[in-house]
Length: 313
Image (cartoon, rainbow, N blue to C red):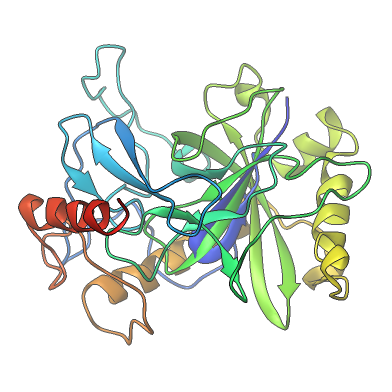
């Protein structure tokens, strides 16, 4: 089983075991006084616009009812438990270490195209990153092929927290929404800025019940954490850039630290969608944040996607 790597909208990565930085903010599961969310358990589908491996490619999200949503703002950070018939299960009393998070898969394991949630576009579809007019691909860093985990982002966080998912030989699909258990976090410094990488495990993985901490990863997945640091250190070198550096001497921080980072970035996201802070170019259109001035109707969201279809025919 290998970890997943998640990228949160607050600039953090979550690996199959997950990780986040500490924060002074409130617990995420507490009700926000001015902001409510549509918490109905649902499955998500994706709808393609444009052509893969092209600058116009977009992957939009919608519910099983066909309503378009933003994977950044409308998919809840905290995953709802549910029964097999999709009816929400009664919530058992559990501590924070047992909380599951939703992860939006951006990059399947072993692939090279640098896909990401477009935070500056309406409804925030997944697109391939472009730099200096060219589509971005990560190089193969020996002995690895492409991304060495399923990689993605946590929703409803301010700066995109990235997530790496530890999972046994399973390759996820772009746009897939999975539930993960956070296990730890790595503080990478990317061109002078902190870029958290969260280690997590898919909740449906048979080994998920046995993996509860970053130490469990070290014991049961020897070499995985070292390979993760090595990959992040070197993956930009083939593009002529220096090796990335790390905080905490490249040591992974534990689950509690990671959870505090998640809380902090979620609080920043709440301020963002309530227009209490400068968005800095981030597109905040959503369909489910009740007190958000950026909330739009289902018809408005449909128009966003239909206008893209017209432009890209």
